[in-house]
Image (cartoon, rainbow, N blue to C red):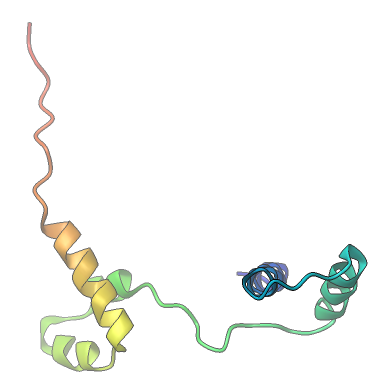
Length: 97
């Protein structure tokens, strides 16, 4: 994600927080905030990780250490994706006529 995407994400979160608290500002205030944020290098506090892609590269002997390093939310995400991967794929064979 580049800098502009992070600014847009911050602005979106700000709008959501304001809506949840029934707060409004003039549109020009939003424009000014966006312009000010553009002067800063903004990045998330925690980088998002693609847990399933990481899992695909972990060797069997390192799995337990890798799994122990995950947060509870990341573990839940891994279990969810592992469950989806176990679902049998429908057999899509061509019918011959």
